[in-house]
Length: 159
Length: 159
Image (cartoon, rainbow over the protein chains, first blue to last red):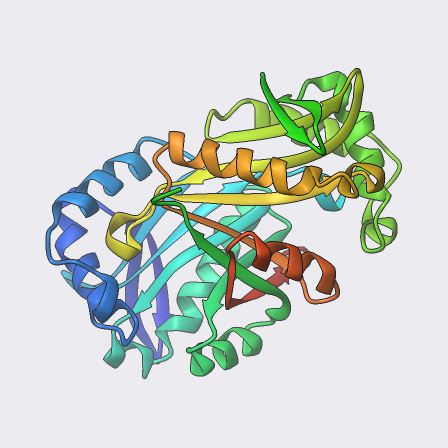
């Protein structure tokens, strides 16, 4: 468990537990895009939790203030051949509760994630952000991210 | 090992071996962007190969025509919490030799990758492509990919 600070207040970052799943679901549903695509049934989230937990290259994190989960993100370390065998830190599912965002918690969480990546040998952080999230794009650019790529998605069901 | 077909000709797709690393390096260097960022020293690529090989959630593939490596790509299965616990197929480092691209091998390789994803439970394929590759973007859109996201990258060295 690590302590991070935003607006002078302490928060903890730790690996998520099964009993955090409901709080993670709530953060994902409390979002303009998530509201339309996150179901209420916990079963698929719990199944995903167990799969993430089983592989040490995935780290599903929660950020807490006291006993309350106020943020989550998922990190994956991806070794790769391109760019001279560069290892990547892939960041998915970043969600910070609105009141904590206003304290600057997002920046503190991302800086923590970058340290996690460096500690695991990653030399490149990468993430994609929906084109419908211009505020998020400004946030990532302030953190040093470059929008150099187009992020493509394709459903695989029904092939 | 799987057989795929492009322009009526058979190709094989299989897991890369250590003795394929030189051919993969050559494919990565034979590229307008790769030419500037892929070093000649095989050591970091071999180290990356061993790390990829050690985790069953990563699959570094080569495509061969007879004994010759004519393509490569890397697949990673990423279980995740968002979108109702959707498992993702992450595709990185797609490189197909020029003469084989003209035979339509790229399409056949991507269709093979999608089957790999479905077999491993993935419901969403995702990749990013540099903004400087408009031909690649048209290729992915023809395959059903939607450019819904901005792909952000950030170096982690020197933090």
